[in-house]
Length: 309
Image (cartoon, rainbow, N blue to C red; front, side):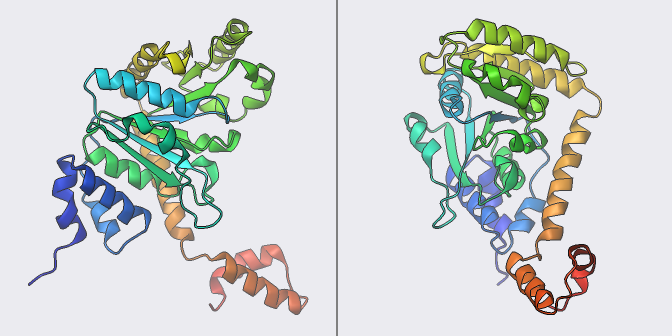
């Protein structure tokens, strides 16, 4: 009797929105279990899931904002998935699950799926498997997928290569940091959210941020700056409306989907080509050359693929 393949075993239930099948598929992909690539290759074309990246400096209230968005969208009968990328535990490389704790009000809701992923040292604030896991989640027919990054600052710009809409969350106290933020987070925002907008100087900060956003206006989209007090659900519907408007506009923007897919393809190809490069092996080969006093970094990099492993 022919053994059932992974995608034959799980794909029908996944496409039917089965949460247990979804959780299992994510684990298989994240751990690169045998047959996971075949599962990915049989995923359907992208559906109607709105993929929204939530990023910004630590302490801006990203998790609180996501929690508020979930509450509002549930009143609209939406199905929502959340991927919270946590800093890896230094002991077992697992996610620390801090965001699950903050979103515990919704953890058992039948229309909400929350998954914490470990960044495992990946640059950019995301998990190395975020593209694949996002596509698995989209196959389960959610209305929204929110991806929250770890909040590591300017290096987490790679969220723009994964999400259809990127929200940058800041607080009024960030006023002095605007100039340094330009080169990183400021470049990728489709929507700015000034959270904790009941604090002092919030209005002045919003005014200055709107001027900056206007100077960086994208082709067919004027970047909005929205005020929220996420703990009080204040301003949350305006954020949802802005997400919907942005995705309608970008659907009409020539080349937007092409650029997004090309960016994802580039990241996946890069990961696969680097897969057989091991840092411990690099150290071993470099040590041998150092012992011979014959080490040149650039000559080593150029010839590394010819080194006998």
